[in-house]
Length: 428
Image (cartoon, rainbow, N blue to C red; front, side, top):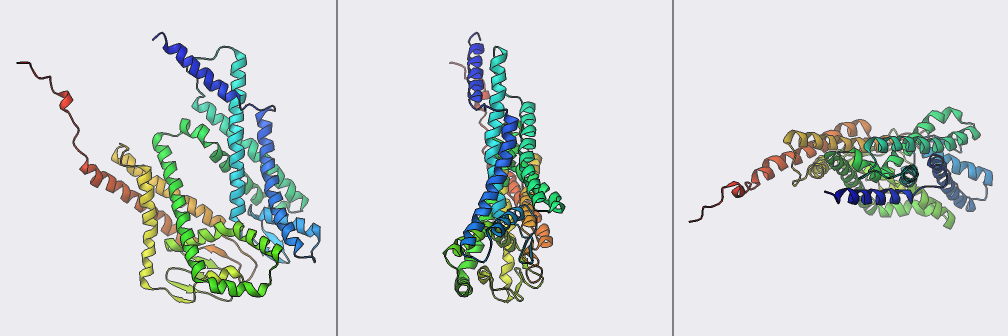
């Protein structure tokens, strides 16, 4: 017992010393604020860079108008409608939105460790370090709360200043809410390794992992459907692309635009795979029952759409897709090796399924918008159908996995070995 205390003190000193290595020169609150501003500026530079690349192939546009177009494209990723040649665009490029989310995640990870480093500096300067020291749960929550506030404030400041410069103060609410949401969730996601283990219970961490696996599974399903659609419609895509006469700079800009809207395509493909389908304007829709296409512009990506007509009846089997995703979520949330009560396992599985469906619906809602005011006024998943199908099927699959675990695998468990409880054999 006499050696336990020095050993724990040594571990505590090493912990605090490691934390102190991340301490910044400036106050970490100021660094976090500047990091939020930096994320906004970097993402704006990316958008204006794409716009400048396109400008090299279009000499009839001024450089000022090109910068304005890049700025509007950046604001469009925050849900603020853009106006190009009189056409109103309200379909956010989710790829650019996710890029800003991950930039905030990187900033959050670095700044949270800076906050721990500053705390370590105060500990080292205040005297001897307590034995077995660790950063308490409430301290991590406090640091996380301050961190997301400062990063979001820096991000929001750039967005609001940009809107004021462009004379679009009326869009401050939409752009501000989007900026705050991206900064808060991105920062919390990036710093999760420094606070999640101390705050979430083991089952909470399993549920978070299950939601992540479910989102990845839905992404893979959407990618598979999109690849099949592109492969089957490649000839039509090439036929639509040929008359455009795109030069090198135009091809680069077009490719970057496709990357920016690629997550939107994946969400629509995933909605189709789950059985809800998606719409392209007021007159065109693709569901598992039928494809109905109206007058669409000659955009190459529309060549991947299936032909008009009814789908075979067996396409209804796609409704099982959500159940399969839910089964995967349920097995990850409450795996076989984790010994938990049946009721708690059911609740965790159901919650994981609902959260997975909630993430999908959030992406689907943000991926809905228009590329004009007429034929492409409304593009995106069929939200009502998706809101009914996704939570029911995914949650049902998660509950099915829990029932299989409890009543099939559970009944096959061997009886515990209790021979060690028997009295020792008497010597003859």
